[in-house]
Image 1 (cartoon, rainbow over the protein chains, first blue to last red):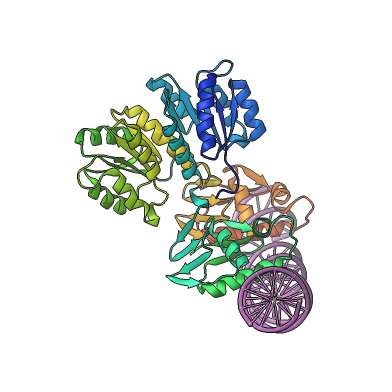
Image 2: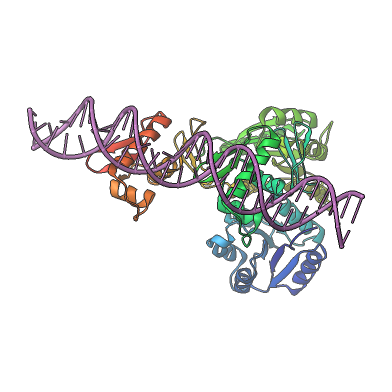
Length: 225
Length: 225
DNA sequence: TAGCCGATTAACCTTTTATTAAGTTATAAA
DNA sequence: TTTATAACTTAATAAAAGGTTAATCGGCTA
């Protein structure tokens, strides 16, 4: 199950398309917002911070490319996925769309199924890191089953130990600040001392045997094999 | 400039397509490998570890989907970008392609320009997250991962050393006054002697080996390779 | 050559982390 | 519900690494 429905904003001036696409995306479990023109799209985007925006190129007011350009300027939308949608089936427009910063480009008439597939494919790619089983060298972490194996030996970790390890391995080589660790693993409302982290780190090191968590003094910890 | 050319493997049984696509991708600066069928594609993929694989769906031996499935099972190819290429313009195949784990799906006849745009768009997305990296010649500084490599060797720097180096490299060739360094790296409220800077500079010089921090007498220090 | 300035070195002090044990809380079993 | 077991947190102490300083050295310049 998904913790939170992904939000998709779709902007098109044809009500029929809005309806069909909304319906299909909602059926798939997405939370959908709509806009009838470029300006509305920008407003809605700011309001809801969608994970994906589907933009019709030809719209009254600002066209899709303009909307994309405007949004991309803002840090909040730097990584937002964008799919262009258009009736124009000419090469130049498509290239322009992709170069403007679109992640995909679909021509009308669209098949709802294909649109869905493409939407899913984009999200799949975008979340690849956060999902399921992580394999780093001989270390395998299964976030769903909550178990860890090292060189095919199962390692029994307590919950906090597991969560801490899972967090550190989410970006190998990245140094996580103690604050980041506390916020992410313990939660920003829980107050525990710094030594608590040390102790858990120690237990993980002990159980793994391998020296894979490196201390970066004055900064934090990082995972690497 | 890019440190290392991205590698693309293209697998298709039509020599014409291999040639046209290779030519265009190479012109764009990519390093291209080719394969004439599914099995060859798997071999080449393992040999070169490409960043992107373009797979024709209909190939003798293993088809594109099969190749994709086989590769996706291996951790090394879990995140490799895959584009399917096919003459079949039917919905079912396209959906299957995207669900198999492809990142994009392009139907023939293909326009080299569109292919290029889509390839670039995928790479743009794929690299969006990892930037916080500063590259100056052979020196690479990753502020997020808090690590430094020189000629691909990892250099272990203490915190102040790292911060000092990161500061100096923020504007290569600019001469930073001792005061600027103290204010920015140590903070304007901290009071430390001038020798402290010297000592840290020395340690960085020592660890880097290369003579890349230049003293400007009576003024300060600057970074240059 | 005296004076200035940075380089170098080693010693000292401070900060941060590691380790251990013990106390507390949560969870599972009886 | 009680008891047993494991997990988690804390506190105290030890160890290590980092940071700063001061003293000395060396080169350059006036």
